[in-house]
Length: 558
Image 1 (cartoon, rainbow, N blue to C red):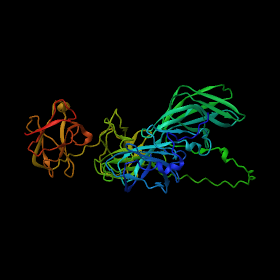
Image 2 (image 1 turned 90 degrees about the vertical axis):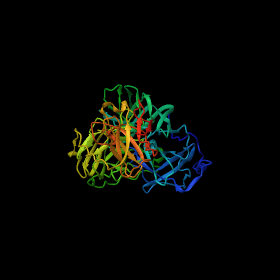
Image 3 (image 1 turned 120 degrees about the horizontal axis):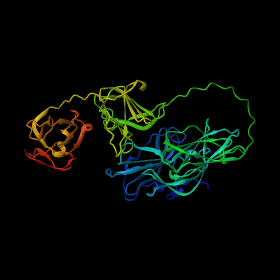
Image 4 (image 1 turned 180 degrees about the horizontal axis):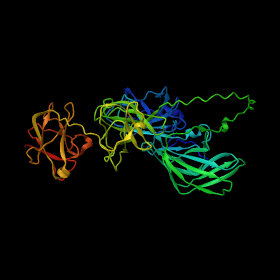
């Protein structure tokens, strides 16, 4: 069966492309706020390229209750994504929209809630066949903004690499991947793909300089493909997979096969790894591009020139360092750039104050990659040290990584080993050593307080495990922590209001880890909701019996 390219959940005639991009009915555009987007690569490189290149086109949907902006075309021009039309946000700046994008662009790919139908090319050995099969998708949310919305692109399909070791004298002519699906319906918001149609055969692209072939297929589970290798003389070898395999979005399945003279038939297995980049590919000419004129006679070869050394050019990884350091303020990301070592990224020359904290995340968003330390690792990392890190999940929460000493640091993240390095700027990570004991706790500097006192009455749950207590004050300028004490041992804890705070301002009471005297969100066990200190004389908050996170409680007068 031959696969053909099809973008088709619903078709929009070429003559109606402009109409398809008009805003939804009954929504008023804001003529002063044009829609701008930027592309962020999510831990990978685009097929045969390290990033989007001049002339590449994406399709953009902005969806609220319906498609507000439908399949708008943005072209990568001079390092930015530019629309050929003037697309404006809606005036209601409180409404959050889903911002969905895909690559490569198709004029017929109008938005449909049920998803986008995509089919890979059957012959990926020809120029353009492989790249046209690499569907990239991006999904985020945004309110109307004058800033460019960062689109975290990722691979929606699966890549297969076939490495061949042959003992034959005959050269390999082609490699096919048979009995696999080539079409799927892709949910742009979730980034998931559901196979459709029938199975067929895909011709793989040759990797230049290696006995290796690669192709792209749609994600599919319980797949039992065959590898068909044709050598000179039209002799074909058939390899069956050893066990049904799942081909996942954004993953690479690598098969290693050996052809021997005595080979009758054999099996292969697939090793699944992350899809990071592509080697240089070598394409066969398509039928349309075959020369119609006789080829010119061969000219004498030019003398070989010495090869110029390759110059490494760092590229954005799609990840960033965000934290309490001054240049970020838990809002702006210091971009992690690629290094000559695959999977190792670095953000350089970041100024940290003592006990500033940071995490690694997908640039601009928290619902993508979110990496920090495990609760079981050290609290404070010292200079020229490294620690193991985890990705935030339902199983374990990734904690902030806290730098012990002030300084200018290069932050490295090795995604292959799940390790973060804090290096004095300019220091090679080869000099780093693992930090196995906690750094020094910060000296507790309690803020100056007034004579206005508030009280806190914890319940039995909160007093368990020797917990201590602190109050976090906010909404009056500089947010501050104050340790709560029980000087008269009556089971009720108290503190004075910090200077600059008064009744009516905000406070959060927290149950703290007694193993440390430092007050921070990393050392917090449980907390109340955001509270406002009453102005009617009530000055004691009592946690409801049996509560942990204390969503409810009462204020009274002590």
